[in-house]
Amino acid sequence: RSLPTNEAEQIVQRIVAFLRARTGHDFSSYKRATVLRRIKRRMQVTRSQSLPVYADYLVANPEEAQELFGDMLISVTSFFRDPEAYKVLVEEGLGRLFEEAGEEGLRLWVVGCATGEEAYSLAIVLLEEAARRQTTVPIQIFATDLDEGALATAREGRYPASIEADVSEERLARFFTRESLHYRVKKEVRDTLLFA
Image 1 (cartoon, one colour):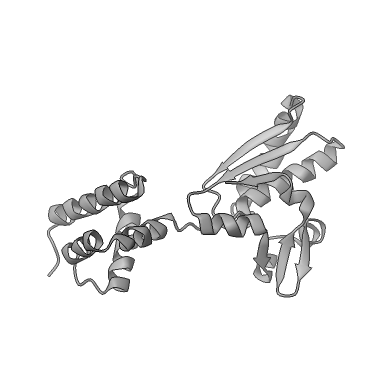
Image 2 (cartoon, one colour):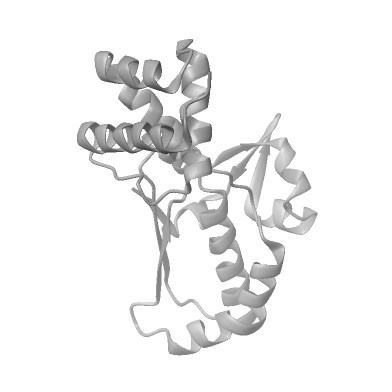
């Protein structure tokens, strides 16, 4: 049987509060549909037949809080994920950024960088603009995420050959080194980023 909506919502709120107490991270502002999808996935994995059963399982099994926490952090990312946004950035935003850059250069922060694709994409467009302007203004991008595993991937800068679908041949040649079935981001790009 399915729970009445208000009862299910109370259990979800209890789960979110428990997760906050266990991990220190508050997911109460996440979209409810997203939270429910993540919980339902964990219910399947743990073979919990209902929301109340899963809530009890979560409380009884401390490691489950970390598993649910990890699922909540799952993000979708790719190189140049929103081409229109990058087009606007290049055409309307980068010029002013470079013109106003002082001696410290450009310092940017990418929040929720996941495995680094979008942070590297930003670094690439900044390096392209610097080359176009023939400037050596320092570029420093701080990229942060809560998921240590994702950060390890980002720091490594090694991605499957399938990135060819998102990155132009010109950019692949200039900013990546082919390694068998993978591409590694070149040092010039990696040196602009600090993942934490």
